[in-house]
Amino acid sequence: MGDNKKTKTIKTIKIDVDKCNGCRACEVICSAFHAAPRYSSNNPARSRIRILRDPFRDIYVPVYAGEYTVAECAGRDKYTIDGKEYDECSFCRASCPSRDEFKEPDSGLPLKCDMCEGEEEPLCVKWCLVDALTIEEREEEVEDRKEQEDLEIGLESLATKFGMDKIMDAVARLSKKD
Ligand code: SF4
Ligand code: SF4
Image (cartoon, rainbow, N blue to C red; front, side, top):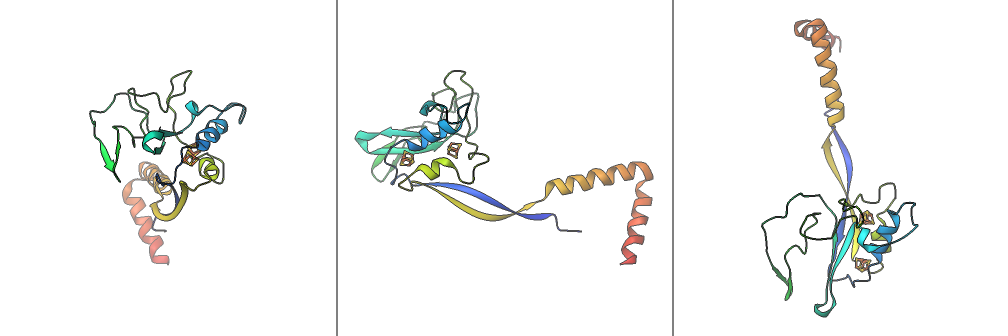
């Protein structure tokens, strides 16, 4: 029997705020990719990545749409990084009631980045010509839960049918055969 571990490739998008120039190409391609029919229109308000822009202070922060939340949080932190002050919510990915980002403009339904499901590479990464967005891949060992769950369900039904003692006897006999 295996040790129920398998290797999974984890993809992470790295964001380099210093490199972003606020061109919004990522917003355009994301909204076009998710338009129905695909590429029939583009509208940054429908994008799953939004650029927080403040050109007078040279601030451009790409933020990805994350989880939906029903209530706004109580946090009102401010960050100063390299002499630039960032407002509350600047780095937050939540689709939350306190702002318009990450909501489908017509329906108000929450939007979430799906890593461009089906594409080889996230399109926002591909379209970011200054490499403010890059992809990083790493291998991680994860529990093969599905296999484990199937095994447990199978054992449980056998135990119900034959009784645990008989199952244990059979396992003992089988292990002696090896
Ligand atoms: S495409 Fe790149 S440089 Fe342009 S806004 Fe998006 S992250 Fe910034
Ligand atoms: S990875 Fe795809 S879905 Fe996510 S923000 Fe980028 S373009 Fe949009």
